[in-house]
Length: 153
Image 1 (tube, one colour):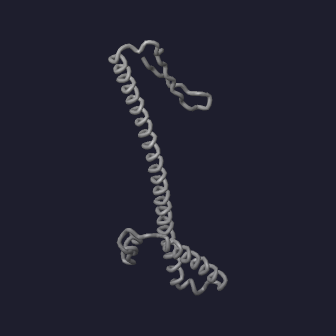
Image 2 (cartoon, helix red, strand yellow):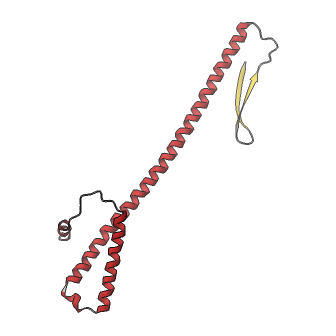
Image 3 (tube, helix red, strand yellow):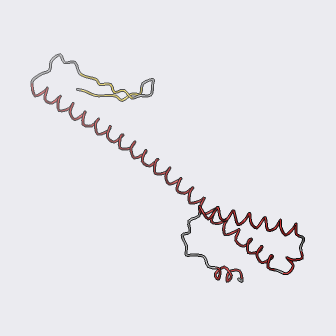
């Protein structure tokens, strides 16, 4: 009769030890056929276990790859949402600059202060332009009339 023990060796690898009965007297052909049948069954069982381990490892590897891709997609989407939020936060500030520049008091402020404020306004516009090049609009086009109605709320 053959039996095996699956043991882990010093290097962490698994070794399979087989215990084989002494072959002193094999007996008749029916005994040999029965032993062969048991060996084939044992081999089939071991092959099945090996395949299960291989399938499990492959599933684990695929799950790991999919999780990494999902994390990368979430990070990209998060960056896109942050960029969109920044754009929506800067637009009202630019509206305030435009309203201040259109006011009569704008002409009365000192030239140095006015040029400084215009410089800040231009920096914000440049930041929006760079964000626009990486921002993909998924909504309907933006209309000034919609923005005006929101400002009144």
